[in-house]
Length: 288
Image 1 (cartoon, rainbow, N blue to C red):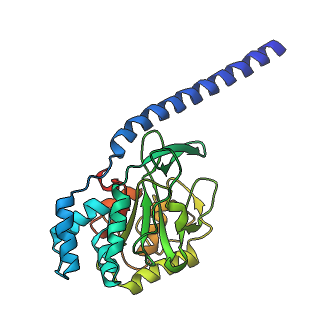
Image 2 (image 1 turned 30 degrees about the vertical axis):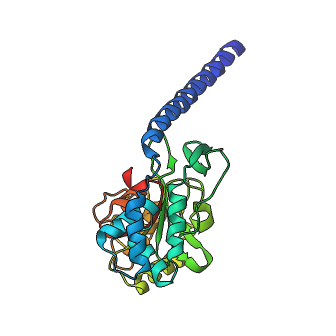
Image 3 (image 1 turned 45 degrees about the horizontal axis):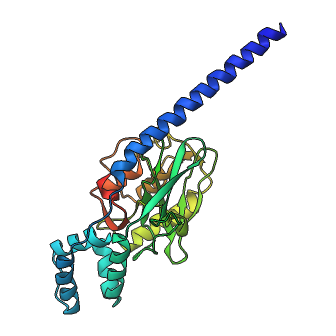
């Protein structure tokens, strides 16, 4: 009798270990594959950059092609460029470009059982952090695709509720309730984007951030968050997930920031939404 129980326990342990070995091996292989096309260093074009710099120095209006070239070489979207120019800080555009074109690397570490997070490093493997965002306002959305499971870059998202103090609201993982997010924690990721709803007033963006701050803390995390509540802002939330929380905050203000997505909303849906514009990116997140 004791022998049978012992053998059953051994079989269970063997099966569990086999499953874990298969999972982690698969995760490693798929992560290696996705890393190869997720990270490519940006390439500068000095000739085009000099022409743009001359325009800025001579107060010549920038064209859409100029803004596109600045984005390709610095990660700065039009809102961030305009903010820096209006503040009289064209030198910061050059600084962001220098950092954006700098050779960088990253390493991966596991947080929880399933999710792998990536941390940016220099070429010597030392941890570095992205510079502070050029333009961050209440209601802005920060996403990263530097979090993946089994090769799927599901990423993470937060909505900014207090830009001055670098705070937002986020839903993190199963077993944790939604709570405050600090902007500094996002500077470690190699692939990051700041997004902003198009043609939406500052008042509405403030309203979305305020709603998240006052009503979307303390919600249980669920991978299926939002799948049953649908696009109904009047149905109280019991569970949520990171992208759904951000989307719901705007929905309560009458704004659907990702109307093209399905029932399960992901950070990448925000990146691809025509209702959101890019303020700034780090890494080639738009190519993933």
